[in-house]
Length: 178
Image (cartoon, rainbow, N blue to C red; front, top):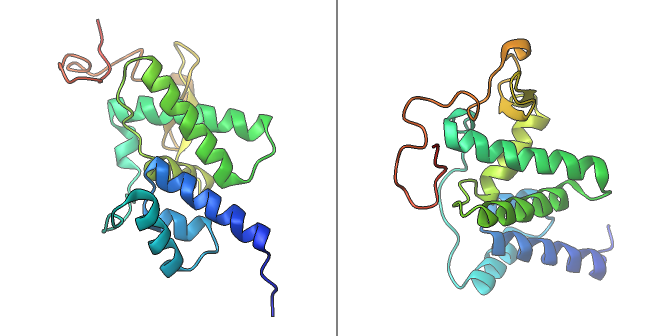
């Protein structure tokens, strides 16, 4: 029989509360803590004041390949990779901190954060499983999210070579190309 540590449980609850405040789905909390489903459900309702969203988590890599989502995903993943190398943190804490820094950057630029914490968490899982990677742009040398089999020598990112209609919309908080 394993003895439960009150300190360990308190840390798990603190992590879950942080994730709930960032908008994480219940499945993320279940995956990243040892707390029971029932406790997480009660905690979610207590912290957010509502029941958690239902339905499946995003499971396709395709969303990360479209123009604006790719730029946002690349920003987050570069922050995540830097923190991974520079700081000694548990993986989920790295995701939380990287997501908070991503939000700060989008707000500072007057952009709406397109990446939810759940998608950011899923992105890290896709990278860990070799389904997505970072590839250097041959023009600007920035690192962008791509499929792992992208021809790296000739890769040009969506900022250096945006699609024809990219940034032409008037949507508040979206990337504008001039």
